[in-house]
Amino acid sequence: MTTKPKVSKAELAEQFRSFIDPDYVITDSETMKPYECDGLSMYCEMPLLVVLPETVEQVQRVMRICNEHKVPVVARGAGTGLSAGAMPHKEGVVLSLAKFNRILEIDPLARTARLQPGVRNLAISEEAAQYGLYYGPDPSSQIACTIGGNVAENSGGVHCLKYGLTVHNLHSVEMVTAEGDVVTVGSDALDVCGMDLLALMTGSEGLLGVVTEVKVKLLPKPEVARVVMAGFDSVQNGGDAVGGVISHGIIPGGLEMMDSHAIVAADDFAKAGYPREAKALLLCEVDGTVEEVDEHIAQAEEVFRKFGATSVRTSESEEERALLWKGRKSAFPAVGRISPDYYCMDGTIPRRELANVLLRMEEMSEEFGLRVANVFHAGDGNLHPLILFDSNVPGEFERTEAFGSSILRLCVEVGGCITGEHGVGVEKIRQMAVQFNDDELQQFHDVKAAFDPAGILNPGKGVPALKFCQEYRSLEHKQHKHEPTEAAHG
Ligand SMILES: Cc1cc2nc3c(=O)[nH]c(=O)nc-3n(C[C@H](O)[C@H](O)[C@H](O)COP(=O)(O)OP(=O)(O)OC[C@H]3O[C@@H](n4cnc5c(N)ncnc54)[C@H](O)[C@@H]3O)c2cc1C
Image 1 (tube, helix red, strand yellow):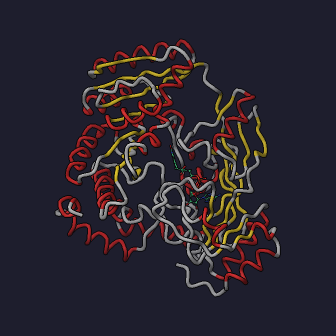
Image 2 (spheres, protein in one colour):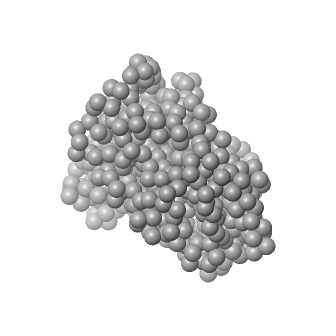
Image 3 (cartoon, protein in one colour):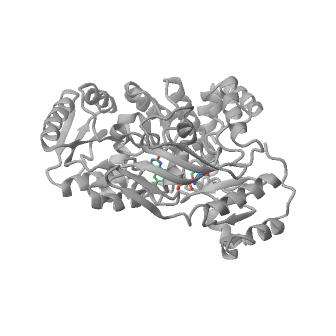
């Protein structure tokens, strides 16, 4: 826990300006405005100041000063996070890694890339393409989000079903600790001796250290990729077909699902030729050699028909494949056009529960009086319900939050978890009390204290205080029985 900092904003800024270009120590509110939130703009806070160091030594000095004065530090990549993880602390420093944007080395023989943390995810694959290589994890925000943010959130994407999350695609991470030391975790070897601190660091949401360099694995580009699109007249059939494909022994490069709201919105936006009358749509991509792709495509088509697909279409060209994906990739902005606001949830469930949970969500949608559109990584069981609401209608945001909490509670009930890839941040800190008991949460606190004894790194995010959890659980218990009806009336 941080105590109140004993240094003024002016003193802090002066200290930083003694070793960082003064233009990169920002103190006026107008210039700091873009830093007040991440992609989840309903949570925002103005920081004390923002610094943009350019070297690891500068990051070390920032951390030493903040640690000495107990000033909170929030590391920031591109600010595309969707759980308010990069939201500033009002008495703290935002440490932007925007100046760390260089690809340091691509080694085509070892199939690795050494990167500064502010390198954009997509830029890695663009640079590696000259060697026939690419970086596997592909969050939909890849055009903007940074590899440092990806490590902090253990980000995933469409292709993670086959190629793994960020954690599976890393060799090592260099970080600056809360006390200003430089530490490297992981190695080039397949396994490392000692504890797996690389895995611990991945997904630690800026709570354990500031990532200053990342070494990632690169993959050879597949010879060919094709996508099968299958429409279903029920969510049940679509959900069951997901398990059907995997149990058939096919590991698709990507297996995505959309429900009827998302299908129509995405098709209006991208003119992708989706079956607009379908209640569920699956996009199943298979990649590899020409022979294996042809074989798996034929099998996937057969499985979909067996599970009751009402339409099946397979891409015959790269253009057609890109068009089918365009609808999926633009589904979020497309849904943004059919509602004044939407709230993107992120939870994970076991695949076998897909149909059950989607049907329960339809019921909840009626109970809460709010529409929900689903577009998600079905193969991983990673749901992204988009709750549609209007923040100008009094009480509607609160009702949306309550609906979101109920969805996450359902995810936990069926054996899943409260986040698949967006992290806990501020947004889901309450649901951590649903996911974990106090003994489990205490383990997180102990790990945090070992890395950051003064508690200056991203305080108030990721791991809730135990007292807060106890209060939240008892409140939840009381509200649970009445929530939909009470909430539905604002
Ligand atoms: C339209 C859209 C689609 C998205 N789709 C996906 C998706 O498919 N999959 C997915 O996983 N996510 C997705 N996201 C969420 C987001 O893009 C990811 O979480 C991404 O990894 C965040 O990267 P960033 O650079 O923007 O990090 P930020 O938002 O700046 O920060 C995120 C967290 O990482 C910490 N952090 C950032 N840099 C560092 C560092 N160098 N050292 C230590 N901590 C650091 C921050 O403190 C914060 O807690 C999406 C977001 C949007 C807006």
